[in-house]
Image 1: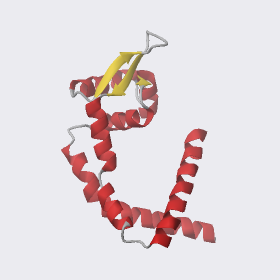
Image 2: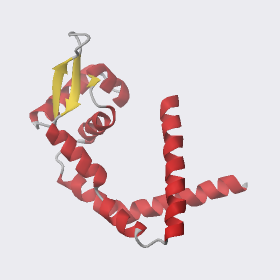
Image 3: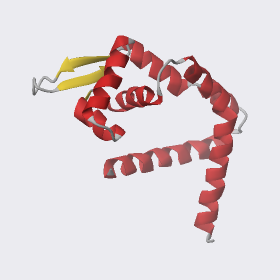
Image 4: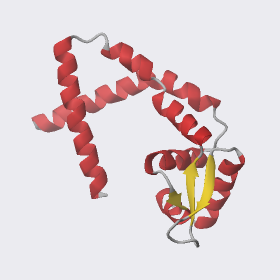
Length: 149
């Protein structure tokens, strides 16, 4: 194993350990939700992409349009998403989060953030600068990876 593989392994193990450390904080909002896994996936896709068509959702989930329609119907009934006409093509219905849906996904995404800030607060200034540099590099790499997909 070369140094690069060893470092990637070390970082991956550390990330996994941190994930376990924050799992309890992240699971609390998840446990409060009354969503199926597919419904949660749709909400998270919408939080990331904004307004999407049913066809785009079906592709992202790897399911048929009929399945997506049922999932979206249940999310609409819970007040988490809304359907609207596509302004460029009235035949297409777009799905987007409502204010309640945005609040729910933000709460889920932000769970554990206060514990993470507490953890970062224990680091010295030089280490925080290094972490900031690494996080910015990771964000650039993630953007490049996302753009390639």
